[in-house]
Length: 135
Image 1 (cartoon, rainbow, N blue to C red):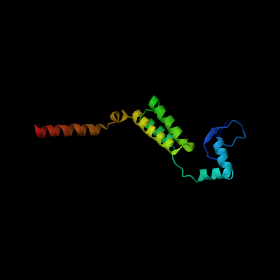
Image 2: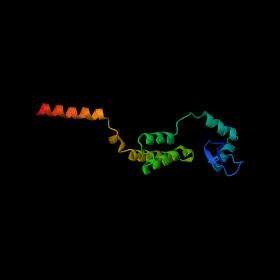
Image 3: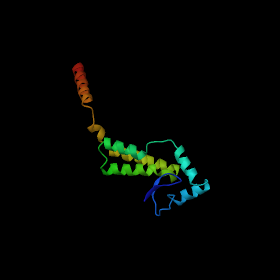
Image 4: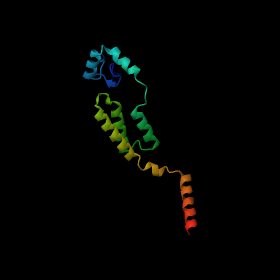
C-alpha cells in the first residue's frame, strides 16, 4: 500500500497499515521535532515547485526521446533527484550534473531534426547573395 510519509511527505510502500514513516531517519526526525504534525507543517510551508521528473518527462516527450534508453536513464535520474531529500549537497550536485549530461546526450540529434525550414531558406539565400557579391 502506497502512502505519504508523515515526516517528509514522500510516497512510500508501507509494510503495515500502521506505518507512518518512510524510513527510520524520518521517524527519528519526526519524534525529535515534536511529532508528525511538525513534519506535515514543514511540507505545507514549502513552495509548490514542479518536480524535476515532470520537467524531464515533458522535455523528453517534446523531443520524442522518452522511450529511448538514454531517455529512460534521464528520467530515472530525475526521479532520484526528486527523492534526494536524504542525500548530501554533493550527492545532489552530482545527480544534477549527470542528469544534465544524460538529457543532453538523449536529445543531441533533435536540434538538427527540428531545424526551422524558414531558417534553412534564409541561410541558402544569404549564401547565394554572398556568392553573387564576391563573384
